[in-house]
Length: 207
Image 1 (cartoon, helix red, strand yellow):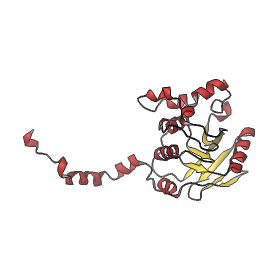
Image 2: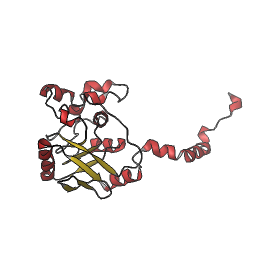
Image 3: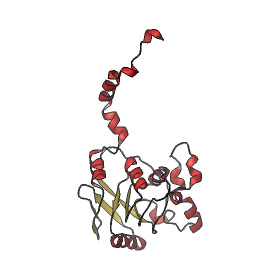
Image 4: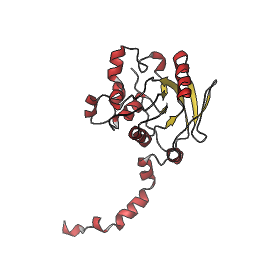
């Protein structure tokens, strides 16, 4: 069982890691993290249960259970990945398993937005290019280096021009995706604004 989690912070421009392939169209959020795990108080333990039902069905042969994939951090998927309910637990579970980047044919809109909000870049490639990546992963270990500025992914044998929404690319390069860090960096501005709001002022003598 592999559970490693280091939350991303600030600017993100370069990613690298081993790829893990998950073949299939329309893999929905209920398959990524079954509904019974949504009762958790926080997301910390979700990585342990990512694809729980699929993994039980495949009895150790699911990609997320294979020994050669235990250090993978780049997920390669097919079309409409993350469809279904809008649960933010799905990308949280993937991230807590160790996934830091996803490359696919296409993504469900809400899943894509949830990924961006927690620092998981989602890139798209053509169906043919995805098949090349997945076939490569099936036969040997694939290690990719991704340059977000150039939207380029490369290994010792492969080169791909990735696609990502320009608004998302700018958010990662600037660090604006990270709302918490952005707030902390602007603490003085927030405090100044707070003191200017008439509806939060009160007379301590009246307490």
